[in-house]
Structure formats: structure tokens, C-alpha cells
Image (cartoon, rainbow, N blue to C red):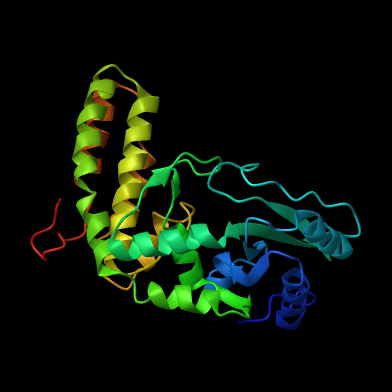
Length: 282
């Protein structure tokens, strides 16, 4: 793990993880997000994933966090941030934004098992416009850096979903049937000049296709942020998908004619090959 900064370097983060792990109900702590993947910017937050049991001592967790911030900290209850985030807290530690993100161990184990079976779904969740991808929990353990894992929970779960399951790759690609289905529906909105509806359908289909590209490359996705532009960074030929998607979504138009032309461009966006290795779906 690379140095985070002058203050919150690796040694400090591991010390913080040790403090967190002494709270009853905390079973493991990991560095997650862009900093774990090495794709962070200098101003990126530090995401600490806390893998916990249902009987977590939230008051004890708040006391530890308050010791770092020098002020009272409120730890959100399960469901306080929506049904698919198990609570947490936003902190500023020595001037650095630190997010404590709680993950229920039983729930993570369930989603890792589903990922191996090639099952996934998107769920309504604040902050996730496409919906929260449930098997993103598997992606988190696969891409995070364990800071405190005394029982080997994170290591075992990461091994269960590494390499990226072929069944999950195939499922994401098979899910592309929705692209033409949604774009056909968008045509009705386009004829009525409904820019918002066409935009929603177009963005959704573009993100579903981006998910399929990432799956095709065996790349875990844990958030919609960067989903479409990062297709261009995959180690496979994506045939200019990211640039073409940005051009189409960035110039929807407002008239029925312009919107219908945009739908045609969205329908022509490159898609990954079928699971059987046949011709492209586009």
C-alpha cells in the first residue's frame, strides 16, 4: 500500500484499524475505494471498511472516532443511509476526510456466494442513481487492502471471488438484452420531446453496457462513479466505447428528431461479445 499522506500514512492507518478492531462487533478493517486500487487523487477520501456483526457496539465505535476528531461523532444506524449501506460515519482526521463504512459480515458472505453463482441485482439506494449493485460487496473484498483481519475473513472471501467469476461475467453480458428493450421505450419519449426520459433510458443503457465491459475484462465495479470513462482503461479492446458514449450522452438534443438520432447512436455503442464467444451484440 502506498503512502497516503504526511499524516495518515500506512502506519497511522494500521494503528487506527487496531483501535477500531478492539470495538466489540468489529471483526475486520480494510482500506477500500480508490486508495486501495491506486486510482485516487490527492483530494480523495480515505475509505475504511469495517466488517461487523449485528451486535456492533456503535457507541464504542463513536468514542474511538471522537478520539481522532476531537469532537462528538455520530455513527449512523443500519438503514440510516439507506437499505444497502449498513451505516457509518464521515470524519475529518488531521484535515483528511475519512469515511467509516460499515459492512455486515453475513451480508457480505451472502453476496460473495451469489457472485460465484453469477447472480446480481441493482437495488434502490440513496447516492446510487443506477441502484446499488449487491455483489459490489464481493468487489470490495476482492479489491480492498486488509488492515486488520485476525480471523482471516477478508482473505477467505477475497479468495472465493478471485479470479473474477466467469459465471458473473456471463450474467452481466446476458443482461444486455435490456439495452434494446429500454432504447425501444425511449423512442416513444423521443417522439414526444421528453428529454428527461430519453436521458434516463440512455444513461441506464450506457451504464449497463459499461458494467458488461468491466465484467468482460474481469474488473470489479463497486460504484457508478467512473464506470463509463474507466471502460477506456480496461486491458481489452472496447472499441472506443467510452468516447462514443460521452459524445452521445453529452449531445442529446431537445427536438424529437435530435433525440431519435441520439437513440440511434446509443444503440450503436460497442458491446462485449456474447458469453459463448460469438459475434458482438451491437
